[in-house]
Amino acid sequence: MNKAKDLSKYGKPCILSTKDNPFNPFTDYDDWRNFDTTPRFIPELGIKYATFCREYQAREAATSTELTTEENNRIIDDAIDTIIRLDPWGIYIKVYEPEKVVQNGY
Image 1 (cartoon, rainbow, N blue to C red):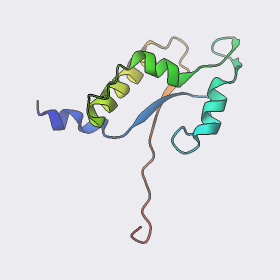
Image 2 (cartoon, rainbow, N blue to C red):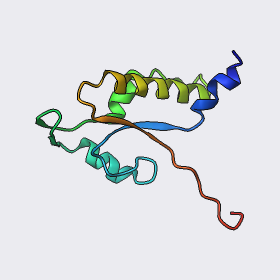
Image 3 (cartoon, helix red, strand yellow):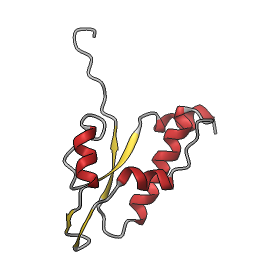
Image 4 (cartoon, rainbow, N blue to C red):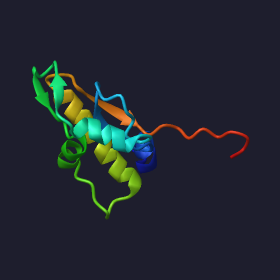
């Protein structure tokens, strides 16, 4: 398979998040991070818990400065897919970087 074609679906950066986090980590990182790291009651778990999604993602995705952005995006995307697939509570989601809107040619 052509490597460029294989990596094409991984062109957009993504971040692990939770279904209950109302903030987008790409557009409102500070609020997203605060929500993620502050203990809150999670009904699926039945306990008060902070999810620390960035740390969980980092543990599962073996990225490297020696890889291209596309290769790192693929590793992160695959790691998030695995986290979601193995999540027994169904609390995790994958959030993609939003498209930049171009208006009036800018």
